Image (cartoon, rainbow, N blue to C red):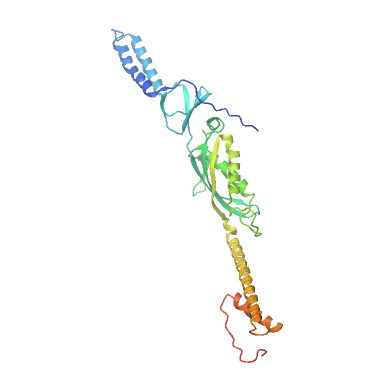
Length: 321
């Protein structure tokens, strides 16, 4: 579905704030002059009415001033109709009846707390990430996301009483957090935590490859683009097995490490035994039959593969005793 961009720059009248401040301050002496100079009779109502009217205009004009800093924007709304987005920086005055909603265009960070998710193999893992995002479309942020309402917060005291209240904080950040959790769960379900079959070509969460980051950013952009939000960067910052299987998986990893180490030890021991037999034969040190060769291979493998140093036994008899 093609997303239509409704955002455009504000083209209405916006005046310099300092010039309009001077004009506004002139209203005060004008109101005083209307009372003291326009009527010699202070009991006449018309000068007082004019003064009150000027005072009301003064209050209304004060509502039109605003200061806009870099990387900020104002969404101009005139009686419910979108008039454009104002992005210039400085001190300005606009029609007081124009609603100017401020939107921050600055980069924001979101630390997504670790959540429990099942990976591709069904193992529960705890995974968290850091999200860097910013507002791209001010129209969607204001009109497509309900930023006036916050998520309800449910709290339970020591007596078991449940209290429902409004959650403090930015509702837009709450929207980003919920969508980030959903995207993180979806991406995690497509990958295993670790390589279980010793396949070097298998992409896993633990490897932290560029492919996982790209897929996570793609899913985040799909979910957040509906609100006019752009994902700058997303990175996994926490990854571990869930507590209920952490001990079992630790023993499994230890067993895999021991097996790999044993394979290397046996491979090296066989190579050394082969080298020893070859040198004994080539240099004519001793002529061994097949039975003696098997005994020598067995002894050398025990010595080379044992965890503890082997205790030597001195043979005082013949070779066959």
